[in-house]
Length: 401
Image (cartoon, rainbow, N blue to C red; front, side):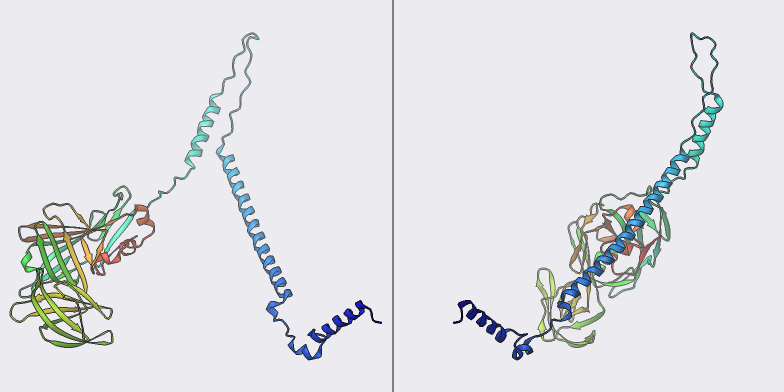
């Protein structure tokens, strides 16, 4: 009779033979070897290699640091030995009376030796170079003449000036830290346009060339002591009449333009244009407005309502507006420049009027940097200021050396 334990041992052996992948020949095809990157030996060897590399480089760094510290300590010890002067030697004094001994007196020769040693040590000390070197600035590609060209009239010129750190700059200027110290958001450069008594009524529809860049004067608004002058330029300009259609090509794309209407006035602000581009209407355009279609800004340079209604269309346009909130004072007004409908915070503007005559417009860019940052981290004004477009899109610059 088979015992209970023997019976279960046979059952377990039979189960193992039938179900084990290695003992049952019918299930050996299911055995798949593990890939090399899942083997234990691969990861063990990789960890050993990485630890050896880390130990090798860390030992080299520690050796170099120890050698460097030893060299520094040796140099400091030598410097201390050289700087310390030898103490004066005391000469023995003769005792005249045993009752009252006299104190030892230093000889004069040794005292002079001590003073000479201190003088030699002080003269051998080389003076340290100043932390901030003088700054040499050079004006580059700055035009000194601007031009006003009326729509129906002869052109006239005006002067253009640039100042750097409140110093009028014409060619090259050398500055040091003592000549100017940055205050909080102090002016770093300024542009001055001397129009010399130009009537405000002459500016609209005129072409104003600032810094060799032609702009169309879209609008001039004088409200009490507040003055705003809107300018605009574009890569293509088209003078279109009401009801006219035009096909243009820009950046490899075709655009169909149709002037649906030119109303005068569209509201209290003046005339407006209804423009359709590729079958889609834009918002009503007033003089100086920008509207974007297919990623390209289209602007209305000016609107002519005398005779046949026409308006100047600028393709890929850029707008520029100077604003002075109080022309009666010489105080500069902050946020005085609006570029592409964005207010530049660092720009202050002051315009001077005499009646209805425009005398000058001063444009200041204020910075919150230090003289050290200007001297050490920049090669030109264009790379120093935060907003490069504050140079009004012109190629002029101030170079630092």
